Length: 219
Image (cartoon, rainbow, N blue to C red; front, side):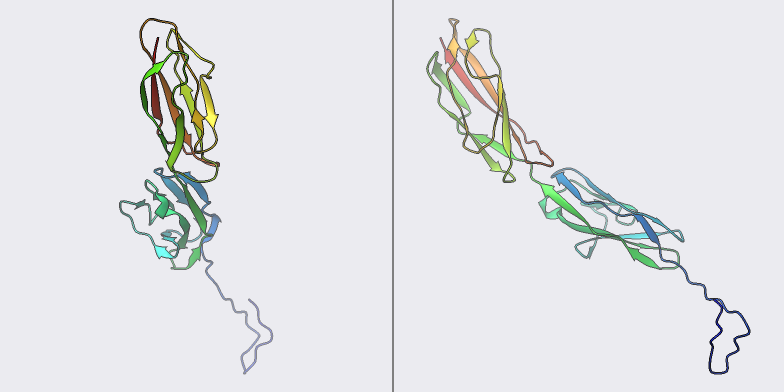
């Protein structure tokens, strides 16, 4: 940088240069995530500058170390292993270059959605009569994100069974029921099985384990 306005007896006839080292430039920042629990969440960062770089990842201002819950805490890619609700928070990375100049990435949030757990009011009805309404199967959730969790259900249809109940459907509310009658046209008991699967809300639609409810229909 040429200076022509120097004072205190310093000559301006020469040319002087000042060289500054740039900090690492982050060109790809970590991106916020919304994921189901019990999956792995991955944050990454890309930087340019004076390599090699060192990386330090933080959650809510606390330095992360590798262990059962984290891997890659000193690399450009952080993996949060088998995420749980307690892993929700804000994550960022500090990238340092060979000269120990550092740059902090933007913060990215992790939102963890619950995998819903379904329950039914009655799981087995062993002695129902043909053409007589079986006991209502009340749908419930014991663990879920609200609002927006739903149920999808299917049923089988053994040969000899007829019914106005659809083969599949969706229930949108806790407390909704599966109800109706089955006709058994054979001379032996037949078992009908409902399979009910809980589905969490958007944007993840986390899917829980299905539960069953069986009805044995006598002739």
